[in-house]
Length: 446
Ligand SMILES: C[S@@+](CC[C@H](N)C(=O)[O-])C[C@H]1O[C@@H](n2cnc3c(N)ncnc32)[C@H](O)[C@@H]1O
Image (cartoon, rainbow, N blue to C red; front, top):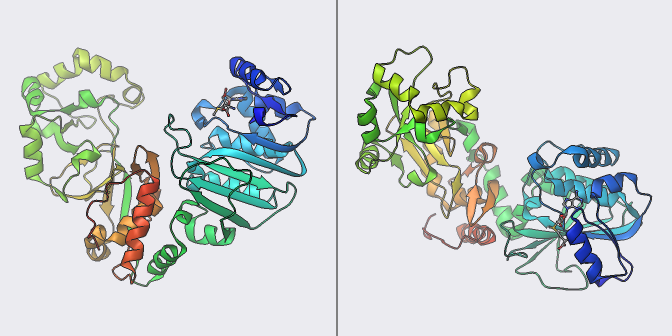
């Protein structure tokens, strides 16, 4: 970006990268310094800014740089959520350095289309620029990194708008202007119908309308209306706490201290987890039994020996084990009614629990709170509307995977009547393509 401009100014923390930038454009003034520490202090103001910020997760964004970022954002009226990734602060701090009427363009992670903290950023941009445009790019701009990247373009610093311009590109192409073929959408519509998410704009307006109409129908139900969805237990050391039949025999663990368990989403291949499924896992000697020792339980010598073994010594040193009152008593072991995949490929699997099994935190534990509603809704799990809902309410994880956080899973929609199945089916395929999943199995689902 610096090389394209005769009169440019660059800030790059890494001295080698800064040196390479100077080499590309000897006229550019490039400082090897922290952007936020510099931005908090500088008097320089700019007509335009462009950036490709680092996508640093909130946990790794810390120290004086984060403190400076936080105070710049606060001065701009934005309180960064603890979960915000660093790129959000780069955009806000850059905007604070623009002259009135200035513009900026950024590479942003595609999570701008779904992350809960992205809505605060979009609201800030709408209140600070006269035009805000997001360009979604389907094919990877940077094939070597796992994140999908989109582009953001804002102009008219000091202005304000209530609309988002949204465009889609199959692949990135250099062009002198942002794409002109855009849909202009009111922020009020996005907030009201899509919780401020831009991702639903990837599907055609007709499909969005059909989905919202289906959701508004009196027979529509959301998963959270009749079920509680949460994650399973956390052992702290899965290898120690999960035992196979041969390990159970070796350590002579009595059945009373064991609970059958579903360890991975990949185990949810059929609609029911029953005794037969457990027998298959046992025949394969899979470690599918949780060592479950409630606090105060009397234990036979054999189990005490297992707890004292080398594996037990390693397990008790693990963080999650160390911090609980009794290191070997795994908390939160419940027997849910259903198991729901947390991360899925082409299909999101939901399996009834007919085996009295528990599940780890790699899977969602579903507890039915309204049996009658559940009986009406759950047969619709294989409906293409529910499948589209999983795509719309969940979010892409990279590598073709779809992730459903509990709060997203609560919003999955069930509705028996929908008049435009073809539109719904196509919309689902569009969203699958955007998450690089091309295995459109079960094309006849309806
Ligand atoms: C995605 S790379 C972009 C590199 C280059 N600007 C480009 O567009 O090809 C992000 C860059 O931000 C730099 N960076 C990360 N944190 C920074 C900070 N707090 N201040 C300045 N630069 C930072 C990294 O060193 C890295 O070079």
